[in-house]
Image (cartoon, rainbow, N blue to C red; front, side, top):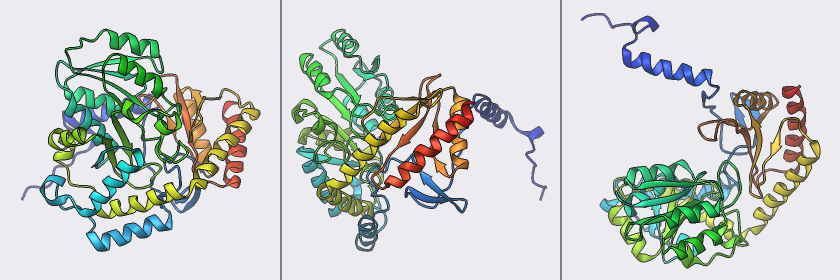
Length: 405
């Protein structure tokens, strides 16, 4: 038997060489990404045995480690199993999935809801199922990547207007043929800026041009509105003005997966034509059970949202008094509080300095944000305490002055 071939750096094949070249380019640009393995999803966790305070999670209500949610997950696994076993259309659809879809529909005020494995899959599924070549999809420029990819996958033409530019949106819609399939799409809360779309204004535009409006409210559901029903509730948007609503289970609800909520006809159409739904193993029934428990908490413990919004207001008020050099707090009333740094290397340096101080807050760099707009994306959680916020503010002030001096 011949000896194994050694693949040293000088013996890499052209494929491996090309990959290595791309990786080196990523490092040179200051965009190389690395994973850190932490103990759990809590705001107080450990990385490599070291205690860390986390300010970059989307677990806005602190439910990912909530005892009731965790126990519901364990009970669900014991009752229904750990996995779905097959796609929903084979034999992976269980009674617990029906229960969760019904609750999600009720929560969002819709006729029906449909579960997906992730928000990315949900957005790909909706747009690729509803649109085709010859169609047109109009996007806010800062929409999530999954919305843009869903449009590209569908073959429809992608139109983008400047972020929040309603006049630009109106101009884009006015130029579309009424004979073609059309769709207007926006995030509810923009994941990197933390600001909210003016959904009422978008709905009026969609109605004027007889175009359906799709809102991805991944970062609004559970957080905004008196009952936590999201951006539409917070802005008093009539439900029929947004016929397609996408939500996630992996942010404020603390579990995993996503859903689409809308009319009976919409959900039936997605069951027939949304390939990421048709060809994917169903959501874990244990996760469905955990999400039902999380929904109970969202709907019966409004004090969690109240505490979260108190932290948001206090963070903004006190950070602005610090006058941090070369750092700008971007406008946002959501748990996403971006600190604009600008330069990629400077953002990385500040993030690393915070890490040295025991605070995990990752730097966001291109291509996630445009060049020159690198930032720290501070995210607050109802699981944070006043003392946690004190520590963040004190450490930020010290580290910013060290890095920029």
